[in-house]
Length: 394
Image 1 (cartoon, rainbow, N blue to C red):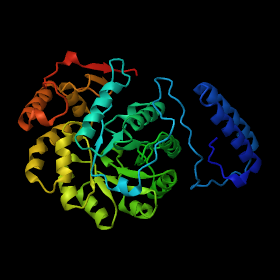
Image 2 (cartoon, rainbow, N blue to C red):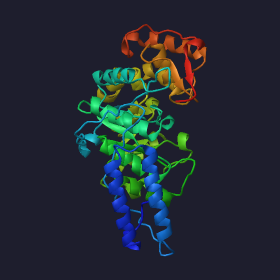
Image 3 (cartoon, one colour):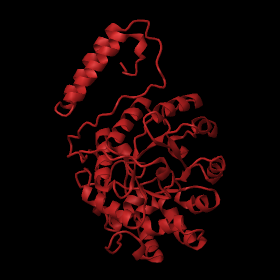
Image 4 (cartoon, rainbow, N blue to C red):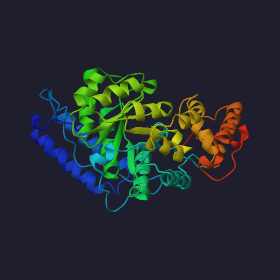
């Protein structure tokens, strides 16, 4: 039984839920997840016995209760005693260069936080203004929610005073998206990235209802990437949502025609496509880019976004962009960072490294562009198949 119940349908039920919720909040830090689940299953059982046919109305635009961050029992949850104050809407809308950061792993498949911190530090040192945590590139879809929120919290604690933290807390399930977004903001993230419902796709009206509910939680960047979701968010939906004060902007991957349409209407837009970022920024009005290539060459991506039109640099980087996206992200990126010695050569399945001929191609690209522009300080090398560790259980 969902707790998104219309309070007027059953006042006593609302009181019962609030009492149980307070107990759960008080005991959350000490109870295991199994005990918490039993507590709420007990509530659900009583709710289902109490509610009759008068439960016919739901409030689609409910205002969520204050979030509680539950601890991760897989590793220490790196939260601060004082939650970071979120960035202003003006600051969020002015980000020109954010890196969709890769999540590195240890040989056992757990997070390699030392490598993660080194990678984020290299982004900040080279001018990244934002870090997108556990997105498509960061493989949030290969994490439990507890791990995902843990990584967001760790990023806030370690880097929140130096960079804006964009937390991926989207889901194709509205309820999960709301809960994860509440937890992400409680952990201190500045803004939430929200994908549109995938697989269990919905109608345009459903998209409006989904996003309206999530937007009630806090600042949101809507993420449109039909190559991942097989479902485009049409401009008609964005136009309805545009007046919402919590809509920061749109991360748009359809192409620069769409970017130009939105910016001409006053919307804040970032492209998610590195290969289109130069044109998007300087010809189509985009604020900037959420970059995959920034993991590798952050200084050059900053230059591309900050220093005016530079077709020469854009052309120089285009072969790297093409290489990164010749297979689904982040497969090639993971391979590249491993060959640069920045992360361990560990893949969580179903991702696997690119074939050896493509690994050789990457080494040649590094030499052509210049090793000095890439992250890390080790010589780039071609890794053998046996150098990679593929983890199926994590």
